[in-house]
Image 1: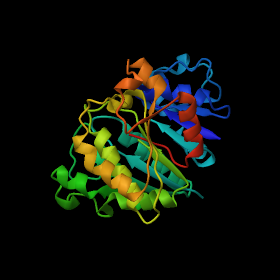
Image 2: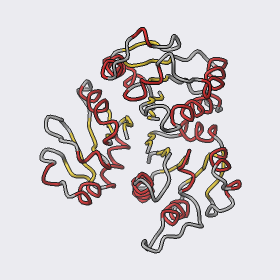
Image 3: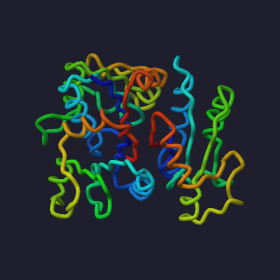
Length: 83
Length: 117
Length: 111
């Protein structure tokens, strides 16, 4: 299973590649939390980045995770960097 | 326990990558994972002990010193260090090393996961 | 696998990324590397773009081991790059093939 770390500059291609992976987990990180997660399955957003930007309400289906959770996801999955 | 390598290519005081990397690294160390950093390009500014910024209680360098104190291995690209006038890393916190990309290749070889920021 | 995603020449990643490839292949572990140019990185595939800065790295890389340089078709199309515009060192692949390469390679770096 692959974990896609997605920041805003590489979001378009990163999300498009993740879409082709049926087991993808997507983590919106840094400015990536400005993205609209609608339609992305298994999507997460980094709490510190979300809180700073005040976008929690716009991240409906995304699970909000802290750095501890993200470390667990990194350890448990193959990491694909688009950040 | 896993071994996680971070490739950090941006410096402090400009983008937040240093903060994401430092905080993820700290969280990983706390969980008992092995953590290595390779600082490349402007990433080599992160380990300087000479940073000053009165607005912040802690400057980025302090976070990287803590990482080393807590067991992380940090190597900075020597070519990048000298290109940026850092004179073989003489302003780095103790324990932050200067090396080359082959050191990074070895980190990657030993790592279970690699995160680039 | 090294993905080159940033536009040359506004930042130095296009050539420092290739220096990193050389170092990655030169280490004791003798890592095998694949290079993919996608997103704004696809601009580097243009025939006319100045490759002099990185020519030495490309030469060293090919001396160490046969290495593929792929450029991604969808990124090209989004940027108006035709196959005829692409330098012969690159092979054109689709986004599906990029996804496959990502699945096949152990470590995925973005530069």
